Image (tube, rainbow over all chains, first blue to last red; front, top):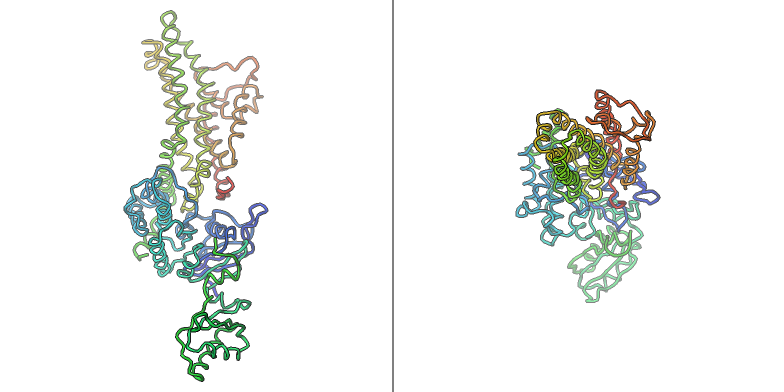
Amino acid sequence: MEHTADHTIVFEDVSKFYGEILGVNRVTLAIEPGITSLVGPNGSGKTTLMNLMTGLIRPTRGRVNVLGLRADHPEIFFRKVGYCSQFDSFPRALTGFQFINSYLRVHGRSKQEAQDFAWKALHRVDLLDAAHLKIGAYSKGMRQRVRLAQSIAHEPSVMILDEPLNGLDPMARAETIRLFRQLAGEGLHLIISSHILHEVDMMSDQVILLNNGYVVAEGEIHGVRDEMEEHPMQILIRCDRPGLLAARVFEQDSVVEAKIHKDRHGLFIKTRDADAFYLLLNRIVVDDGLTVESVAPVDDDISAVYQYLIGGGEAA
Amino acid sequence: MSASTEAIADSKPTSRPPWSLWASQIAAILRLEIRKNFIGKRAVLMYMMAAVPILLMAGLSAEISWQQSRNNNIGEVNVIFANLYEGLILRTIVFFGCAWIFMNLFRGEVVDRSLHYYFLSPVRREVLVVGKYLSGLIASVVLFTISTAGSLLLLYIGLGSSGGNYFFDGAGKSQAMSYLGITILACIGYGAVFMLIGLFFRNPIIPALLIYGWEWINFLLPPVLKKISVIHYLHSLAPVPVPEGPFAMIAEPTPAYLSIPGLLLMTAVVLVLASFQIRRMEIKYGGE
């Protein structure tokens, strides 16, 4: 893949150790615009990676560049970058509006600009009604939204969001994902960590899977899945004669397992070469007049990828 | 992002001359910090400390007022105040008050887990140091000059009209200005030192107590070592000399034209060190 330094987020052989404890090790990445999700269990290094991107911590080894900028020049860097961290804490006694407005003033914005940007950000996260309430009186979901608003208020090109959907109700989650998709459509980089895998699946252009401080896979979800040859792809074919289909699929060496669905109207197969299987299926349909209702990969999503590469249940 | 807002986002703050941008950023930091310094939970202790000398002087004033019927000695009251000022106000109240205010400028935000909002803003960390320091300075100067002025006023009120005449028309006015000046210089000097300590140490209490001890034994130190302290320069400026006792190592007081620039220079050096330290600082709240 060719990367233009000022359009990508680049990790070059980055390691971070907290004393003797490993944060992340030998991470080399180039993240393109769009939504990139960081997925992995607790302690896998997701937050460390985000903190390294924003300079809150420094790499023990290696270099991090965000659109060609380094975090040790914050006066330039943070005009382009916004970070919604997981720290659920705020300066005391401020309202939601004051919180966002005050830090926009710290950016150097004029009074009027800061107010305009603050209102716009509050509008984007649907928090206008609570703008003049003290943050101390906010619910967890509102606190999450006001932090999100603060991180996007200066309209950065790169947004780094650590578990941004935590604490949000289903309606707000859907709205927020829609906002992320909209921002990604505008050409922004969004780096999001999440432990809700079906939401990751729904919103991500690419994923980075982390485990024990190592990147175990990266790229577009289906691409990652295709490369996992040790885990044959599972496909469910809904058809009128699953028995016949089962007998024919073993013509192909790459098919390793076939199992008739319990309602006897479908067949599960496991194949190491999905493309070859689809060609074979076409041939069977033509040769034997099989009526196929649907063909769907069963484990071609982030949950399956996570399960195969990291194991256990949902990410944390 | 629309084209128009992108233009604002990219051009406005960076297209300004750096000094103008830094000034507006410092002003924004001051607005946030002064609110915290004066109305936060941590301010309660500060108010209590500033009230101590005033309450004490109010008691003393009543005592002096009773004695004044027999003996009207302004010189004696001057010495009483000079001793109380140096022993209580300067060495204890201003010292620990500044320790509390300035050490909490950064350490307090680490404890509250809110420092990252500054670190994620497009503001040079040196500018943040200056903004935070000035906010601490404003809080400490306002409180401790009021405390000093209130103490002086209360003590001399005990002398009745002669105290009033001395204070408002006589030498008392310049004396009061000197004490207020010393208090401000103490806030400037101690403030910088304690802010630096707050940046270096996770638990800054022990280094603060060590400095307290060093400042208290200053009178026992040889002249060269005396100069490595804040109190030496402040003591030199006292309008009414305070004897340091029979065990004191006598040293020539540093004249004001040297002690004031010296203190300001030391403050500048300490702020530069603080700027270096904050550039290296990482946010790891989990370890606090």
